[in-house]
Figure (spheres, helix red, strand yellow):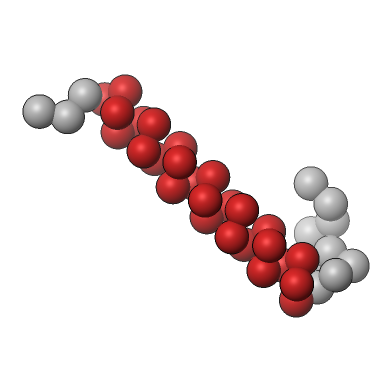
Length: 38
């Protein structure tokens, strides 16, 4: 039985990974930063 806290932690990790991936791709594709620096 999965605990809600575990699911939340996994979700946060996946979100952070996705944000990091897209921020990296954006940085490569658009050096000037379309969305601006965050």
